[in-house]
Image: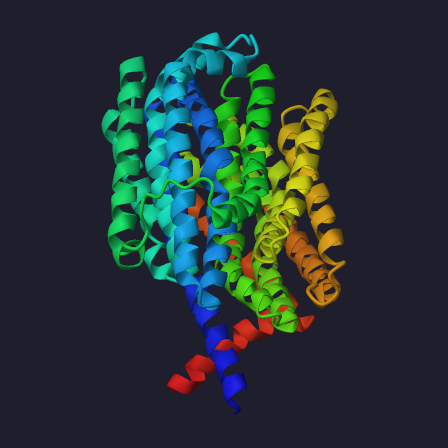
Length: 529
């Protein structure tokens, strides 16, 4: 084997190992996040306080995503990676230090204003809606969530820097620690009163402090060179902001769309829709967050390096393999959640009588509407990462702007006809349009475009169709179980059967990803013999 091929193999193995490590961290993070949402339903058993707690996060989350959240992986990481690869590490560190300093000051000012004017902000958001008491509770609870943004920003910046150095092991488990601390705050403080709601959000703010201190500690060797530098006139800083600004805006699109969905959810006649929407959103993002986000985040610095070295074939091959790997895992997940929507919701969130079958059915409807987005938004996320890696940050922004128009329009047009499910179906339709725009534009770069996607998608669709057909047939003979353990076992058996069937079908149709997985698993087993 030549030295070049050996280097490529080692690089490929490194990417796979890093992806597995990030996935493991995300599994723990998502699992602890589910526990958090389960205990929200248990401790805030009254819909008023449950919806107030959920809505309290909406504006702080929007501020975070608008000002800093999306820029970390998508601007700082590839910029710093390129600077390291080209031997300009010190120059890159200085530009990122100025970037951090500028946005830290800006965020402190914005968060202070958010605390002072929270009542006015949430009143504007309510639009004079009938749920004024819920809005009042959300505004009060948000006074501790605005300061939380500052520490979340500092933790996220640490992660972005460490990912540029491909230190994925140091960044994989911080979110789990944060979720665990949030869970403890909910268990200890939460309850059906305004003081208990306020104490809970104070505990969540402390969880963000712990999160930042952990990330700063595990990455202290790489973070030492970064200093507070106030030099807004610096040219390298301007270049970084120019690259990051479209990302900052496009990253907020997801949060704005969630605000839009929450607004329409409050217009529905039944109570509890905001919390049900949150449950469905948390659930569909389980496969998306574990598979697509992990694969895309690990891909980003390597793809930026390929492009920086003008290795366009390597960039194309990397993007092709990462897209197919993410979809190979997300496609059966989408089919399973569509067919088993209320059963999945019950398994995750229904642990006592406070979470009723009606609550599960309502969240299940939302989940069914989201199921398409598991596939399409995975493509959107990875294609966005590809555009960020090559410095074309305005394209995802334009695609995101389409979503800001189509999402509320679809909600408005579909709600009178199909009710609650219109909200998440509108989100999925929006995701399809964004995906189409991104793929059409990216495929114009002939040397960078991913290869073999059409054949892969056709074979995957056939495998999915067979899986869904068999699963639908099995569900016609469903047996009701009296205990939680038996219902969980029933869902687990059906899930295992469905995914095994999808995998076998993909082997029959000669899907490369299934064959590679088979070779890796059984190849290592044979070697160990």
